[in-house]
Length: 510
Image 1 (tube, one colour):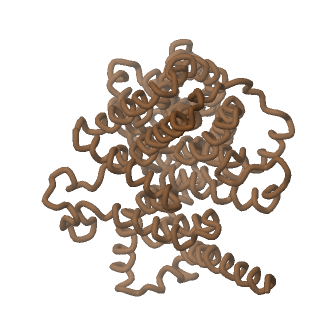
Image 2 (spheres, helix red, strand yellow):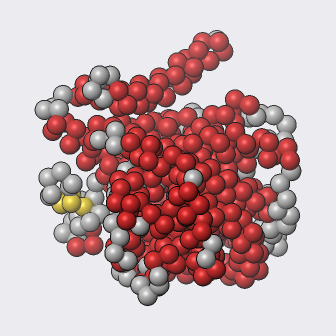
């Protein structure tokens, strides 16, 4: 308790607290710009911390890290263009709800979910950081492969009669993830002698294209249809009331708790990443919605404006932020790529993450932990101001002009990831492909999951089989690898149970 109070006393220094607020505001604004992912947002602000005292510098970084993921939900809901990769699933139900005239409600759900997920994760980090770090140590190559398989299997519950198309989409994602040097052999694959593809297809431009450019094409088609029909072009969604009814809050409480738990678990596993957490949380929310609410009067279809579809990914992605610091602060092992940048921020000020950080710089270590809790509490009122400001500027532009604005933001976001014109072409081609997939009824989610999990799946599989001398049963070994065996069993169940239920349904219909 004395150490926690030490962290609070360090954070409550007026300049440190002011820097944290500045970080939250900056992260929220930068996160709302399409194409600027969490890594870019964090990396942009590291140079500003060079001349700051370590307490202020790290408070700034915590604020940016927490708020960037939340800011990404604003354009995801308003124009179906995720501001950050962590808000890509929010764009589905969020934009659908906004188009129905409930943009304020969707934004409020996203904001509240982010804050709740972040607070729960911060409390877990505050109370259990040393003990939870031991869980992360249990994950090796075998467990990471099983985790990737579980992530891919989680999408089965979302396909609902489109399993074949979903499997095709996942395979497409895995194939695209194979472009570039092999992590196992070191040989280039599918690069066609292009230096731009040596490290693979850049992920940020790809994501910008899959959602941003595709959304622009949808908007263009809507405008053309309205002109042909002779109707007046509808404007972009108005925000309206952001008040959440008590009944909806009670309905979302289990989603917030479950999604935050998933985010906490995934966040502290090295290499798992935020996207894995949001997909698993989204899948669990979908299953609960279909059991309890689907088909009832006044309820939308899943993916077409369901509150749980916004709450689950937003609670999960902010839960990852604090929990990803568990292995970093306790063991010196980053939970994901963004938390890895904290190592650089600490190194700039002569500190090394790990057990020695708590003994040599205890006030800094506990200040960082306490700052995550404070950042999420501060973020709630700040977000409302940012939402209103952004909506009165960018989103107040007429619908026809918004096509050009979206194109400009997307191309700028793609170009900013490496300052390469090639990235802009990647975004354009990805957008055309994504729009074509939507016309063909092929779901985009499994493809994105394949893109994210492909490298981890391949590297973990190769290393696992190398260690086990080619024994595939190592993934199902309940003695040496009980965690892997459990996750593989759950993955099999996720595939088998829907098939059995489908057969039973067909039998009962006869």
